[in-house]
Length: 150
Image 1 (cartoon, rainbow, N blue to C red):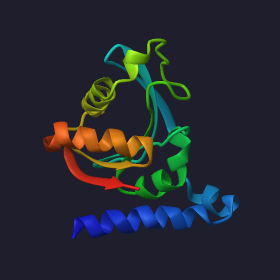
Image 2 (tube, rainbow, N blue to C red; image 1 turned 60 degrees about the vertical axis):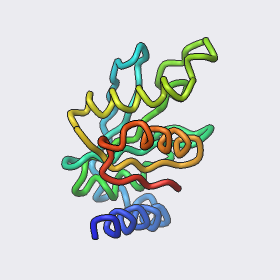
Image 3 (tube, rainbow, N blue to C red; image 1 turned 180 degrees about the vertical axis):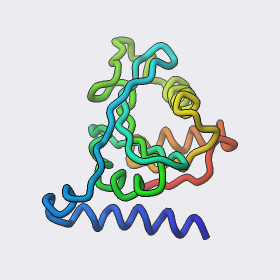
């Protein structure tokens, strides 16, 4: 039953996105920006709310802001975190191509979840983020409550 609720909250966030910005801003709590130094890189993330962790992974060539409306909706009763994956926006951008191998990106996620003080999370991902999320799920299923790929 909880999976239906997560899907409804994600879709609710999509509907919130269609509201005028003025209507959303009146009740929207502030997004907090933070950094996590993990796996030899500095990852930027935006977060809102308190409660169980919902981690949003962006697609190519986007960044955390892709999820702003869904984060506002989920942040009502969850800790919604939108990550800038390595190489994007305000996160570290290693020069070596090898630094972007899936094993490094998966470890970034595992250590970020740990950094955020969670054992498990709901992971919501799109596009390139979805490819990484599938790999994460295969390697660390014990860390996921739910996996949503869009």
